[in-house]
Image 1: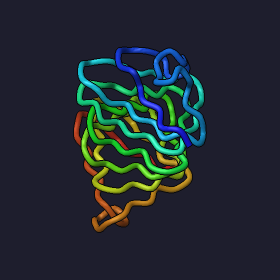
Image 2: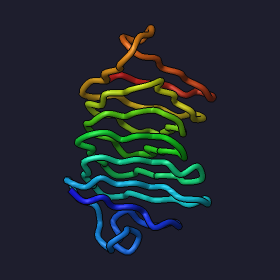
Image 3: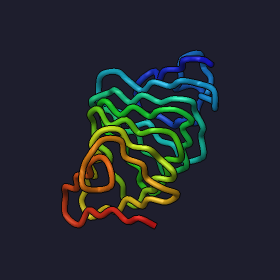
Length: 155
């Protein structure tokens, strides 16, 4: 398992030039998107990683494809925008940052922490189960919805 980091600046997830070591992350890799400044990392295709940490206050990770995480996606800073893409499997650890979705999909994802849907006129679809650790009034865990017409649809 390799540890691969985004170099910074805006770019395409599937371009090896954007990653440390000049390789696109694979299924066994632990990936970090961190750093200063405002930039966007865009995923239009499919990708699979072991773990992903988003810890860049000004960064936008724009998923319009399908990202499969075998372990944990740790959202610590910045914005994870599922747009029209999907997050499949693994655990979404909400420790900070923002989750937004134009019409995104959570598919068989376990959530740790409060799941906050922060968007305007957005819908986050859940398919294949949504497990939430902790206590609250949506099964276990908590679900916060802010924004105009932000909805969570369980399919």
